[in-house]
Image (cartoon, rainbow, N blue to C red; front, top):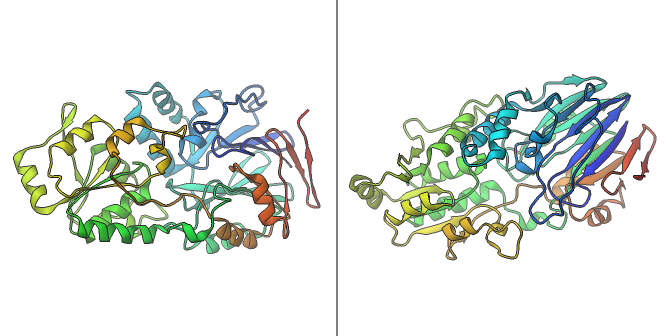
Length: 423
């Protein structure tokens, strides 16, 4: 088997990995590069052009840096994504399609995308693929056990071990993966330890306390961060505050609520009977605000899940605000003018007086080490990282760490691995 990292050896986001065996090609992810990253164009045989009859693309999850550029790929290329992930991505692209041509094109492309389910093996040519459900800030995110010939590779995708759904990771690995020959793993948080990464449970407790102590609460977060959305919904219920979302956010929550085959029975992803999230109704370009609504909020308080833009800004200017607390529950780099990802609209909406309640969607290195111990690979290939050297320093005393440049090809065997540099 050969593995080529076409992009992602020294950057976070925009990763593209190729597995090749006997002329069959399996690619993993094809997304946008993160803001501030030097733009690179890929021209890859069997992916962007050429004979596609023995090629397929797997998508680990719906974040834009993993799926956002599939519209550029030939229509005849088969693409596979998780069933719930596809529904969430369709909801997002439908919502944004009227203002963003890329999202409109993505929605069209999604109609021909195939789906898979966790723990259900499927084949593509010489490859056997087992989708492994993983905990991440994107719901329905996957790692893959990829087998061809006598080799078994574990491709982690993005994941973490401090979310609501990570408790059974060891059981899942034991049941569906076992020991592997090679591990291709994300290393986003290579410089961070477990000591400074909060769990989603800890974060939810902090929100419960904050919502209880403060009558008026506004939270800015990604509408597709499903775990955080449902965590805040239950936090608001425990604090006895009405919980408000707009129609798009409610649609995204409904995709998951009680319907997912793996997590549908969890209380986290279920609405309490008679206590579904309240939907903010629109009047034209603005939300509907009347005297009865204002009186209700004045009496009960509120938790509003807000998004950047004039529509929410206008709503917040017309409802009770004395002592209101604003929370940012996403990466604070969006508010940092020195960052390429800086969002003027979000900065304007959030303002300068806010509380930062957030935790990473990626694994710390101590927890990653535990996963490596479960898999016991002959070698580890780091990607989705801006510091492969740091990763190698952490693991090379116990494991062979194969680092490379974008475009390098790994020739794997049951005995050893070797790297062929780009010509």
